[in-house]
Image 1: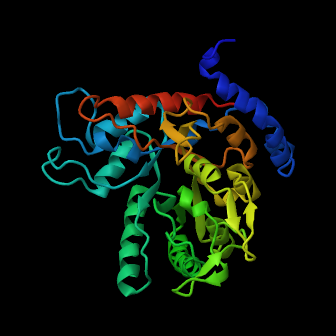
Image 2: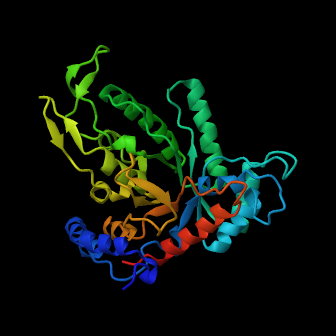
Image 3: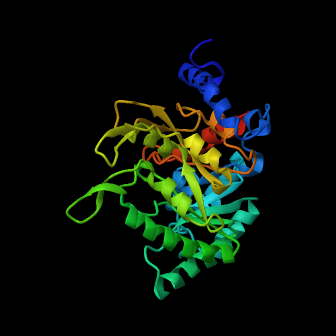
Length: 356
């Protein structure tokens, strides 16, 4: 077998084989249908999605002569042609040169409907405080979500950038409040993780000059948040790439006694333990580069070293989840304006080909 047999590098093949034992162990707690799902598709046709941040260059592009689609109408039509069925938004604006004004949510909804697409989420804004003004602002966010026909509404930011327990406690209270508002509209409010959310919570040990704890009991920040929020009001979108970056970055902590402890993060185990609370994923791939700070470099789905086959086959609730392809560096700039849509097609083909 050569290095590119069946479009899979030797490193990916070895990674799949190496992951099999761990996959069985995780699957053992999920029942035979989850651990041994046969050879069916892992991402059903209607669940294959994209966050428009990946093609933001073409959504925001002014009318041009490149022949590459631009604006919501043309880009969404192209994504539907590729095969995508779900769309996650990263803003609701396009270049005003297309219509002579800004597009409206109602017009975007018509484009979605005309192309057989479903809006399944948005990286909107979740207020950082709770008061009458921010509550009214969030009601407007929910209004737009309803116009677009969404079932989920969220944010691209972690609940807080802090390492400290008190700030995460405040975030839990705030998200429960806004999550209850979303639930009253039939929407699931979700937070999207980055690697820092899986760092260890500072919840013990000596206090610093500001009176904040400097050590950890070994609980990770987002896991603490998951445990503290109402499961009927707060949901999660794991960015699988950033979770693997966290696995690379956050491998030890200083315990309350000042002793360094090792703890390796397992993204699959976190999801498998409470899979229903993760309705959405960002399916973002990366090549492993242990010499870099992040440990990975972003590439189109299927061209990296993250084993999506094992992950999707063993996280439980097969067919429930909604993976959205994302690649932050997909846009090719003025020298290659068609790159993000090419990468969208490459990534769709890989997503649709996953079996397990």
